[in-house]
Image (cartoon, rainbow, N blue to C red; front, side):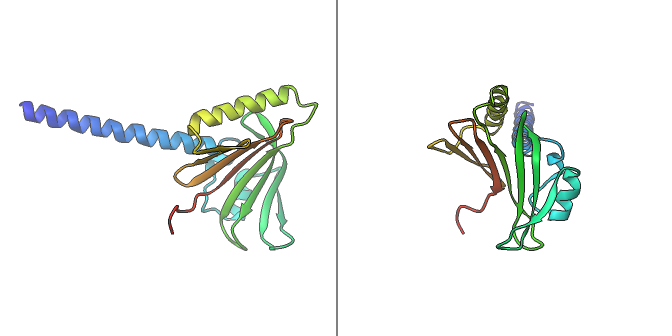
Amino acid sequence: MGAAASAHRLLIALGATVVVCALGAASARAEIFDGSGFQAISWNMHVGDVEQVIGNGVSRLRNRHSDYAYLRAASYQYLGCQYELLMNFEAKGGTLSSIILTHPGGAKAGAADQSCGEGLSRLREKIGTPMSVSGGVQMWRLKDTAVSVMEGRRGEVQIRYTVARPLTE
């Protein structure tokens, strides 16, 4: 009976570990794609698919140099702050490659800067300690996503999510 009980406890512990790890990964991914419409977005989506998910308020534009499509929303609520949203795609007809959120900051920001700071704090809590910090730029590498947060002196903030490439190729 002792060996069977030990095996049973080991199986329960192993199952609990798998559940905890899965929940941790899911919560980080959910925070990255937090906000209206972001929950249903993944890196393998094409511009039309993302456009349908985001809905009203987003414009499809073309880069003059590459002729690749991108999506833009002049005002997008994210983590309690107003940002300009840009969503880039890898190639003509390609999949989503980056999500860039830019908050201009400025002298009149005040309460907006506080809510933006609180939103960034919640994001940092979810994704953990950055792997790199240098000159106002913090960087994280998650399973499928590289995240960078750049903060300026006058409250400017840019959050950039990109597809994480393998470390060795």
